[in-house]
Amino acid sequence: MTRIQSFDIESDASPGGKVRNPYGPQAGAGGSSAGNNNTLSPNSSRAYFMLGLAISVFIGIGKMLYPANTSYSDFDEWRESKATGDASGGWGMKHNHPIVSNSISNNDVDRTSANRIPPSSQSSQSSSSSSSTQNMSKAAAATIDNIDHELWESDLLQLLSPLVIIPSHPLHEYRKYQTNDFVGSDTKFAVDMLYDKSTPHGKAYDFLLNRDTRPHQIDNSALLLKDDMQYLVQRFVVTLLFYATGGKDTIHNDTQSSKMEGEKKGNETDGMGMTKRSGSGGGGWESSTAHFLTGLHECHWVRKSLEDQFWSMLSIDKEKDRRVGITKCNANMEVTEICLADLNLVGFIPEEIKWLSSLEYLDMQNNHLTGPIPISLGELDELRYLSLDGNSLSGTIPDVFQNLVHLERAFLNFNDFNSSMPPSMCNLREEGALKDLWSDCGGYPITCTCCTVCCDMVAECSEMESQKGG
Image (cartoon, rainbow, N blue to C red; front, side, top):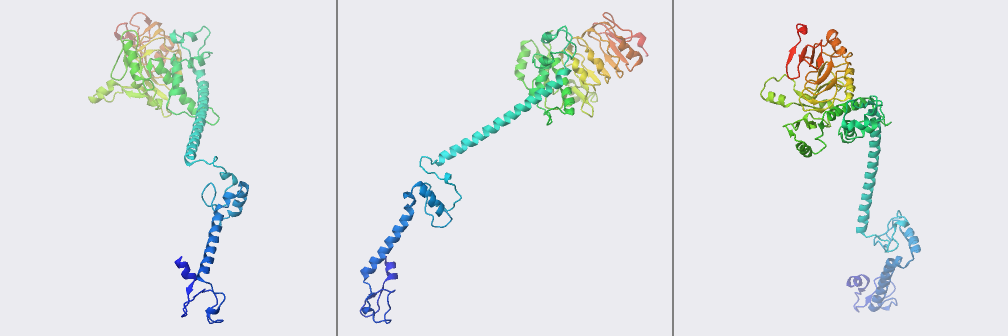
C-alpha cells in the first residue's frame, strides 16, 4: 500500500507541507495549491483508491464465477462465444482448465459429475478396449486359419483319394475295406480309409494334413499348384511306405512312451532308437532312423547307417554307400533311390509305390516284410535294381515285369514264394538288361530255369550251371 500511496499522492514541497493530488491543477497554473477547490484530503484519496480496487476485484471474481451460475444451455452458448482463442476465456466448471479453442464439440464436455470418468477408469477402459481388439484379431486370424485348413483338407483329399489302393492280402486293419467288389483304387472306401488312423493310409494322410511342418502352397483359386501336387503325391507315398513297414513317429509323439510300448511287447531298442525284433511279434523302425517325417524335403530323409558310421571311424571302405532312407533324388527332386535294408521293417509294401515313377533303385533286403510282391511294381519302368531278399514275402511272383526293360539286378531269394518264375521275368533275363536273378530255386518251392543263382531254404546259394559264363 505504501508503493501505491507514493505513486498516487505526493507531499507538497511548499512551506506549509500541504498534500496535493499530483494529477490535479498544478501550482502556478491558476493560483496557489492552497486555494484550489479540487485538492483532496489524504483520507479521501485513500477511500477513492480502495473503492476502485474493490470494484476491480469484484469484476475479476465475477468473471470466474459466471459459468457456474449459468445453465448448461447458456454455458454452451457462452463457451462457443468465448472459446475463440482469446485470453479472456475464463475457466471450465468441470475440467478446471482454460477453454481456448472451439474445436471441441458439445458432446466432448462432461456435463455432470456422474458422467465424468476418473483417470484410472479411463486407463482400465482403454486396456479393456485394447484387449478386446486383440481378441477380435485373434478370432479373425483363427477363422482365416480354419478356412485355409478346410481348403487344404479338401484339396488334399481330392488329390490323394483317387491314388489309394486297398491291399489285396488279408490285414486286420483293412478287413472292413477288403470286400469282394473292391477293384484297385476305384473304391468307395478310399476316403474312409484316409480318415482311419488305424491304417497306414490314415496315418500318412493325417501326417500331411495336421502334423507336417513343411509348408504347402495353395493358390488364390484354392486349387493345388501342379508342382505342389507332384510333391505331395511323392511325400504321401514315402510317408505311407514308412507306416506300412512298421514305422513309428518318434518326432511328433512321445519317444519314451514308444519305448515303453516296445518293452511291453518284449522288444529291445538299439543305439539308433530302432526297435529290435525278438520273436515273431513286434518289430518296426522309428522315424529318427533316417530323419523321416521331419520338415525337410523327403529327398533329405536319409541318414548314415550304424555300419557306415563304424567303418568311417576306422577309415575303412569309405567309398561304399551305406546310407539308409531316401538315398538319391534327381535334379527335379524326384525320388530315384530308396534303401531300407536291415532296418527291422515289418508289414507290407504298399501298391502306391508305383506313383514313384522315377524310382530306379529299391533295396529292402533283410527285414521282416510279409504279403505278396505288389503288382504295381511292374509299372516302375525306370527300375534298375530290386532287392527284396531276406524277408517273409509269400504267394506267387506276379507276371508283371515285362515293362521293366532297364532292370539289371533282381534279388528275390530267401522268401516264402511258391510256383515258378513268371515268363515276363525270364524274358528280361534272356532278351533284356537283366544280368542277375536270384531266387529260391535250389529246391522246393520255386522253379526257375532263367535264374543266375538259386538258393535253398537254409542259407546256401549256388550259381546255376546253365548260367555259368553267360
